[in-house]
Image 1 (cartoon, rainbow, N blue to C red):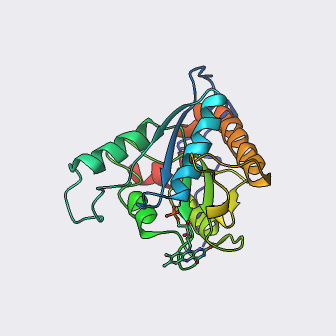
Image 2: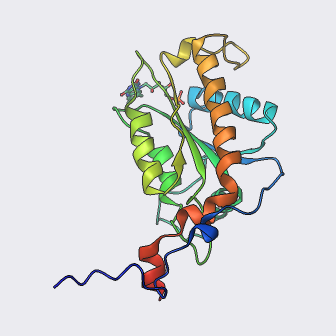
Amino acid sequence: MNDLPNISEPHLDLPTLEKLQPKKHATHAPRILLLYGSLRPQSYSRLLTLEAERLLQRFGAETRVFDPAGLPMVDSVTPDHPKVRELRELSNWSEGQVWCSPERHGNMTGVFKTQIDWLPLEIGALRPTQGRTLAVMQVCGGSQSFNAVNALRVLGRWMRMITIPNQSSVAKAYTEFDEHGRMKPSSYYDRLTDVMEELIKFTLLTRDSADYLTSRYSERKELG
Ligand SMILES: Cc1cc2nc3c(=O)[nH]c(=O)nc-3n(C[C@H](O)[C@H](O)[C@H](O)COP(=O)(O)O)c2cc1C
């Protein structure tokens, strides 16, 4: 006996093509939140994040950078802590995000992960990450590797984000910035520019459709 539902039944909440068509086209500046994963005063992941922010602003985006200093370990305080509230409000506000972690022991840092650990998939009707675009980046101390960006991609999937194909991994990051904290011209800088351009394109293409992209049959069914 096959007890799968008959998918031609009209009462099943399966959308028709008409319902699937995106309708609105927003024209405001894309809202991008940038997160980084280090508390060091001379942090290269922070410098890379700020370089990405300059490019995003040049492309016409509105940007915010969250400072992770003072963010408590997850669940060590209640979510009304000012840093937790700030992070959640910024994530709700965003239409796209940039995540930039140092690679540490072949993975993202705890400082980075703690920020995502404070972001629930849902707070009431609000979904702070779902359906938003995401660009992943990392800085390396030694030769180029991709362990942190790979881990960030998995995390982006878990947070149900649209992670763009391109990414940035800057090897020997300590050699790539000048005394003013600006990135030196290099193929890494060109790649960073490519990644930010791609993030803006994906954000413009998908931001009006975030709700319908994240609407799932199995969840609608559960809600009844
Ligand atoms: C304990 C420790 C482990 C590290 N592990 C790695 C690693 O696995 N791969 C790597 O490329 N760099 C590694 N590094 C180097 C850091 O990624 C590098 O110093 C980076 O610039 C730190 O980020 P920040 O400048 O934003 O603080 C490690 C550094 C420390 C202190």
